[in-house]
Length: 391
Image: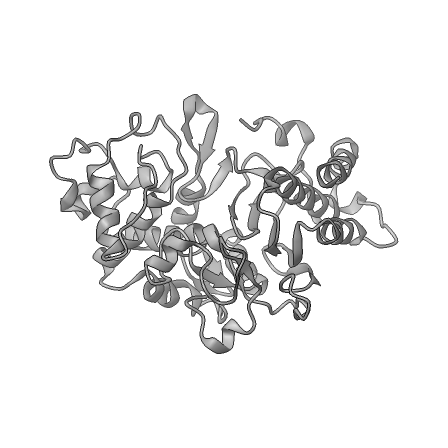
């Protein structure tokens, strides 16, 4: 039933005409489609609740909370101020910008061999493995269990000794180990952990007061729940087991945030690295971060950290342009940003059903399609948007 519901909503967007901003029809309730999607996901048991935020380079256009923070009988109502475990969004909200900021400061380079930062890689037949390969998941590395005794060193040693699958750049394999190594690189290059460096460089300057690793006990009470592997409700603890092994501060997961804070970050991206007059990242870095890198013979397109067109690109929806970019998180989070139409969509949820990945992907896609239809300043042409088919 769930997939059928989203199929018909998605079909509506596919067959609907695309309007310029001043031609978008004034519906009695311009938010009805978004409400229908999220409330349907709640009633179908996909999520307990969530927050949707749509904005452009200057402002928030839509923000609404739905449902509750968990499926517990006495669960609190979701609010716009609810804090979420944003899971793999950590990769693009903390780790990627930290690495690129260090590049901007001249402390590391995208073309640095990984072994420059990890002597453990010397003599392991990985001389051509570059930092850029970690950022684009084209390193040939796969995930593996970490030792509980010294998890970060076991991550480095395991990656160093692992036999690479395929040649660098040609093989796309989404793997957390890439960003676990990148976070440790931030520490080795800057002298500060990822949590400290990201807070100092990005979160505090942009007023992202609710964005942090390892939320305080007080902030934990504002968190939406995630489900542990045994269905235990987690509030303020990283859902990702490896992130917990690494002390809650990891390059691939572990960051917590609110929709409002993430909107600040998205606005910075749309403004070429500036936020309310403050230069956070250079325009050049923003362009490098979102430039396309091709793998699998051109079938997969990634930015540095960011997703552009891959098997994980469902939040692009039907109307966002082929230059748009974003990321998803296992906990039920996603961001998609389209500079062409000057629009971004944030979805944060308390996810309940982790098996119905198809239904969740359709929810993300239909939400972005609805947002683009309702709020885009200049909707791109359908043929341009669909020129890159999903692999």
